[in-house]
Every structure is written in structure tokens, then in C-alpha cells.
Length: 508
Image (cartoon, rainbow, N blue to C red; front, side):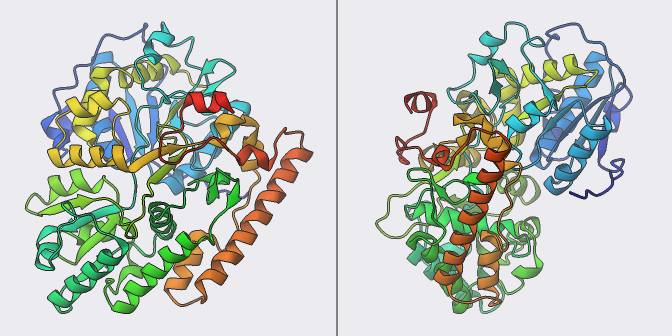
């Protein structure tokens, strides 16, 4: 596949060293906590070979790491370059950096890349010889943080699972005044599909064109899939959320994009648009732009994630907002699901197999996997990428609203099966899988903008195309020698009302 040239990172790089600390000028929680990290003694002797380099997807993580690495660099007497890049750039520059031997010392993997692929291709190295008494360190993590096929391979530990995946990108955040004026209190009485639609309509009517019921980032195409899938799951249709598991009901291994729950979810979005309740400019907005318009009073409701909470509290302290679960149809008992393990796969960090500063990376990894590091992470990042240690979230100084969000997620979100934890050879399938075009996101977007018609017909076509794409990928992987089959996507012992844990994999 043709890749873009490696872009200059100079504008995004943060250089932290003995002379850089005084130049920091961050806002909010980062500034308040600038002197409170308490860098511990190194776990092993530190000797830097050039600057230590770290790359991840930024956002609230960047608020923490810019502060932390400034202090860490000064304490260790080294230089640190931190890059927080958008995912689409990480997906391009990291594989190129691996090929050119210019990749960072520590990195997250491109989205939808199974860790087994990075291990098999020699991108990453194990932590076992870098972190002393690693089993005692790992014992401090909650069950499900380390899983064979995800961050453990052939008995070796490869990845740092330091943030929880128990979050959703499509729960309700709302303007209290607008919703109260419309007669709704979503924190007291969670919205159903019916009352969600009604609340949006009444907010729009009450504000007579000055504000609308719902806003979203319509030109950020993944939002259409995230919201639709969250609605369908709350309606009782569990399914996977990424890679070759996207849209798969793991109880049967079947693609379920044309289930009644998915159809109903799209019908709800289109009905709200017909009502005139959706902000008319959403197709020109991405998710951050839509988020920024909420405190300005543009809409009463948005379906996004908990990363909004600390940002609004920091940048818009007078904005009175609440949070509530993703709407569900009246009488349903569905839950939002994360299919992949307790820890966030997107944020799991790895050490470059050719890093000359691997011991520094391991030192940072170790800190982030301690109670001290996890509490300090929670202090700064809050619910955006919550600490994987539940006790750390409780002990942190994140706001009470942030803690309510995490408590809501504990009830609302369950961990589903991860096929790669069952059979790491599925990485060979994922590496050749080509998601159909149009995808779920583009299908829903096309229906919303009237570029396509017939909700069930379009979703049935997507289901058929997804099955064909999966069959083709499995066949290619099998022909290359991978021991895989679509039966690897069937977890007959899965109960979506509870977490799928290590014992469940062992019971298969």
C-alpha cells in the first residue's frame, strides 16, 4: 500500500529536558499538578542514547505527558521528545518509521493492527528482561489487563495496559438548562429512544432556531458508526467493535448489521433529522468542533465520550452540563459493550524492538503501572482515558462529575470476547481484511444525507458484503498457512450481561 511521506513532527514534538521545564505553559489540571508527580527512583540504571522518544494519540494524554516528561527528563538528566499525533497520522508514520528504523522508542500501534502482527513482524520487544520482578508488578493490575494474544505472547509480556477500555464514545452529555426547560432530567430519568427524540424536538422548539436538540460531528465519518452501534447495543444487539470483529455477534459469529436493533438505530437518527431537531450544519463539523459548540449553546444534546468532561470543566467552567447513559428503547436491558479486554488496546504501549533506550521506556512503563502513577494519571486525565486500576480512579482528584461518569460506565459497559486473545493467528486474517465500501459509517452517513435510501436494504447489503470480505480474508490467511476459521469468532459461553474474563477463555 502506498504511504504518505514521513511528515515533519517539529511542530508537534515536545522537547523536555533540563532547560525545558521553565518554558511550560499548560492550562487547567496540568498546571495545577506540575510539581506533584513525585518521580520515583529508576527501576534499573538509566543511560540514554540520544533523546528518548514517545508517540501516542495525544488529546488529554498529552496534557499529562507534557508535564510528566518535563519533570521526568529533569529528574533523570535526559531529553524526551513527546509526539501526540492524530490516529490517521500514526497509522501512516509508524509503519514507515519501523521500516526506516526511525520509529519512536515507545509507541501505540496503528488502529486495527492486532498486537500479534507487531510481535510476529519483530516490531516490538518483551518487557520481561527490562522490568525487575515483572510478575509482582503485573499482579497489581486488575484481572483481564494482561491476556494471551493481546499483550502476552509465548509467555512473554509485551504491552503496557495502563488505561481502561470501560468507556464509550456515545453517551449523553447535555445542557442542563435546555433539557430542564424542556421538562427532562436525564440524570434522574435516563432517556429512552422515544424521550431522546422528544427532548431534542422540544429543545429545538423552545429555542426557535437559536439552538437545536442534537449536535454531532457529521463529517468525521466514524461517528456515524460509533453512535449507531452504541444505540443498537443498548437495544439488546451485542456485537464487536473493531477489526474483523466489527458487527459480529460473538454468540453466533454472525454479522448483525441488518438486525432490527441496527435498523431501529438508524431510523431514530433519520426521524430526528426529519423533526428538524439536529443542528443543520453537522456535515461541516468534526467531533472536536461539535464538542466546542456545546458550551456556546448551539445544542442541548451531544453523543460523545467522557473526554469532554475535563475539557469543558477546564475551558468552560460556567457551562452547566450533565451526563447520562446512551439512550435505549423503552423496556430493553441492553448494555454498551467493549470487545477486546479490560484495558484499552488503542492506548496499550509497546517498546520498539530496535530501541536504544528500551530501559528508559520500561522505567516509564513501570511507573504508569503502579498505584502512584495510576493515581497521578487519574488526577490529570480524569475519565477521558481512565486509569486501569479502579482504586486509582477512586483515589484521584478528578472531579465528582468525572467519577460519576466512571461509575456509570461500570454499570453500563461490559467487556466482550476478543478473538485475537483466543487465536493470535487471526492477525493473519486482520492483516488482509478489507472492510467493505461503503462501510457501516459511510452507509449510515449516506442514508442520513439521502445519498442512499432504504435503511434495511442498505444494511442487508452491508451485511452480505461484510460476510464476503471476511470469507475472502479467512481464505487468504488459510492459504498462507494460518490455522484459522470463522469458528474462531464464535464464543458460545458469552453472556453479554457480564464481563468476559480469563476464565471464560480457558473454559472454551
